[in-house]
Image 1 (cartoon, rainbow, N blue to C red):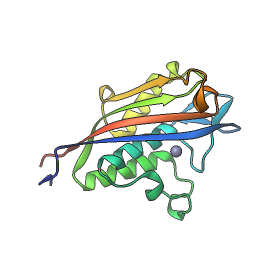
Image 2: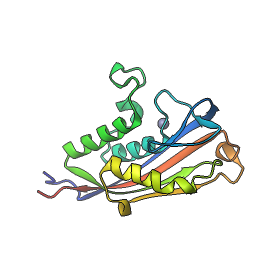
Image 3: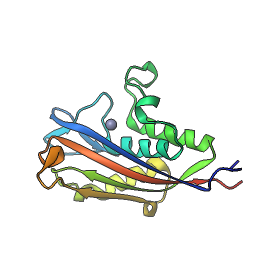
Image 4: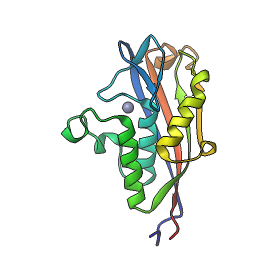
Length: 166
Ligand SMILES: [Zn+2]
């Protein structure tokens, strides 16, 4: 299947959502208690979105907005886990599987430290990788910029995709 394809491909993704009252704060499917949550048409899971874009990017398949437009009935009310799984399916169809993921969440508050294990476990289940291949790091915005002022939450992800050997 791999043929002339490179054995490894790298991808990176970035996403941002506004923080607003009356919305849940969901990161890799984990609902984190917070006075504000992420605004968006889906569940606005900024971490799943960044990882989805990284997987799509590794295979040069465009971006999340291309594959899952908010105008498409097919994806109406779809959870972000479905976006990620669809991107992984597209990669698998091309002979690639995720090897590892390294992600960063940028959020001023609440502090996410105590949710690290739950977020990593959920992401690891979502992508079908052991926990030691799934890294999630946390940063604040140092009180400057939209993250630092508590207006938004961002996520960045880097992935390595490996051609499956058959
Ligand atoms: Zn998003």
